[in-house]
Amino acid sequence: MEQKEILIAVESGKIAAIFGQYDSNIKKIEKEFNVRIVNRDEGIKIVGKGTDIEKAAQVLMHLKTAAEKNEEITEQSLIYTIDAVKEKSEYEEGIDKLHDDLICLTVNGKPLKPKTVGQKAYTDMIKNNTIVFGIGPAGTGKTYLAMAMAITAFKNNEVNRIILTRPAIEAGEKLGFLPGDLQQKVDPYLRPLYDALYEIMGADQFMKNMEKGLIEVAPLAYMRGRTLDNAFIVLDEAQNTTPEQMKMFLTRIGYGSKAVITGDITQIDLGEGKRSGLTDAVNIVKNIEGIGIMNLTNKDVVRHPLVQKIINAYEKADAKKQARREKIEEKASRSVFRRR
Image (cartoon, rainbow, N blue to C red):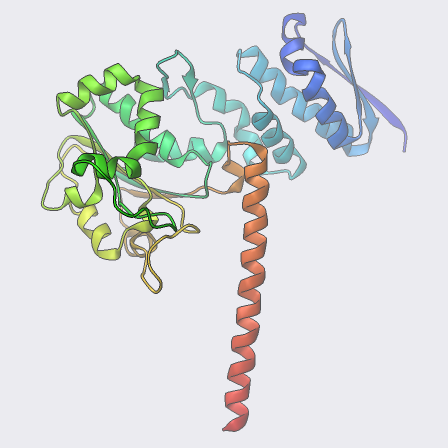
């Protein structure tokens, strides 16, 4: 197959951002598409064969757009772009739009934006619905983005307060007796919510608003008997609610309020045989107008690239286990049929 050349015009000041530190971005693209990429005075030249060179050019065009908008090109964003182009994913069309969707600035002035097309669909769903279920594996940003949306709504005076809650369920281990008063006992369960608040809002601002009662971080049990008006409510780790708890929570929502319910249905820590309130609720309320359900996937993982690989490995292992269970059940049913 004959080699081809493609030249992409790029401003000289944006070349370094596209190439990455020690040309790490370019080396990865070259490896993924079996092409050679060099810097030329007039831009970036790609040398390769067949469709590989065209795909490499597509990736570089997306990186060019990011660089022109002064976006940081991270390892995660590069891998996401490469995967979308290689798989001819529908996500590719929305990659360039991610840079325009600013949610808020962190306390350090860092712009907080969706990093995947799935995350953008999730934040858009939160804007346009009263209740949203954000379901997905670890690292998809479902809780962090919900917190960012809550803080933005609070700062814009769209709501009067923020309420963050989660069930106090131990994640597969017994913690035993915890010292301190009631708040100190439940704080370990709520620590991930505090961490996100500190990063986005800042510890001082968070403490001031908490003292005024404008921000409340509490276990789910504290929600019983309340009506929550003009509030942005985030229920985290919802896979560990019982159906009764979930019904209780959903019926607390009052006028002018918005609720986001997040959870990972592959990490349920309820006791053996107990149903998850999250899976129950999604099936029950899925057709109600004003309620959105967003299923984030391993494609939306924005932690270390290894996290995505770990999730894929577990999904494959679970699929094999399910296939074995189905075979055993099929054999058992055949055996019963023969005896009859």
